[in-house]
Image 1 (cartoon, rainbow, N blue to C red):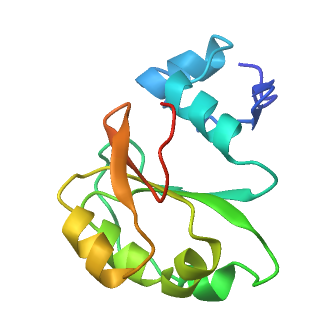
Image 2 (tube, one colour):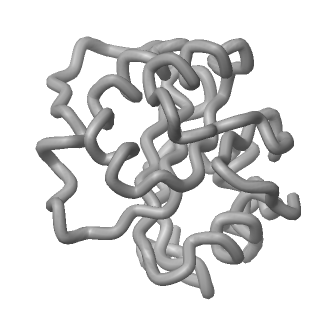
Amino acid sequence: MDQTPPSKAYGRYCVPAGLETRPAMKAVLAGGIYEPQTMAFMRAHAGGGDIVHAGTFFGDVLPGAAAAMLDFVIPRDRQVTIVQLDVEGHEKRALKSAYHLIHRCRRILILENRGNETWIQRRFRGLGHWVRGKLHGNFVYATEDLDL
């Protein structure tokens, strides 16, 4: 098998051996992308800022792993425009780790599970994040209206 990582306009992809039959990997290996609407949305709305993406691999069991607060990992001089989290029900905990980042950057959150809207509005009081739509099963929260 060719060991060169698939590369396209969106960057390089790591395809771990033995996972070539998974839906996302099939798309990447065929020259496409998985969740094309999500990718198009993020490219259209990232502006000059960074995208922080944290996710698990399509429902895999999560092993115990060391975690770091996003507030400590992302340098203060970095402008983050999108935070996407798909961490199998641990979104609130992950968002708590990005409290200062979200207050500083105030942009777009893409989260797997709905029902966080009231919690987000209380936790990030005054920022005005509301559900603006849905992309590939993930809910888009933003402080302003967006075209999805």
